Length: 139
Figure 1: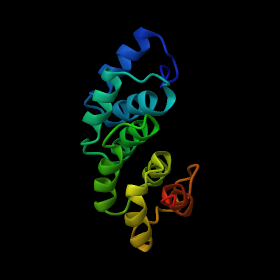
Figure 2: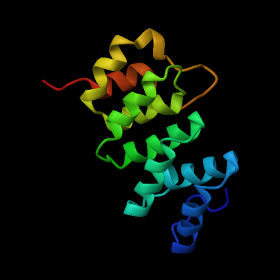
Figure 3: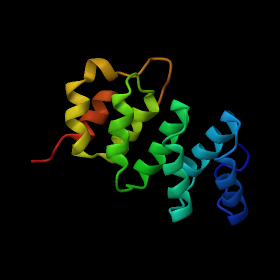
């Protein structure tokens, strides 16, 4: 947790390693720090984020997808859609949708709104309606 937000090479190298830690909480904090707290955008970070998209933990997958969405990584919208299809997304995943602003996700969000509303136990910066609005195709 203490390394989150530090942009030194030593901190980034440590976070890249910790993102593979067997402990779920360690991985979660490392992926959050790399994906959301770091402004860095390089191949090593993208590789780790893509690796964590297949993590067994839904929160870690959402953290990785958020990091990819913020970086406008090619393929992020498709990966987010696959995660949405798993059902019962956490609020952070909806926030990642909004970060993409990708019209590719509009139809899936709008069509399945009743099934994908995130739980009220999490508070993030965006609602499902906000995400739909951000992804509405511009005509």
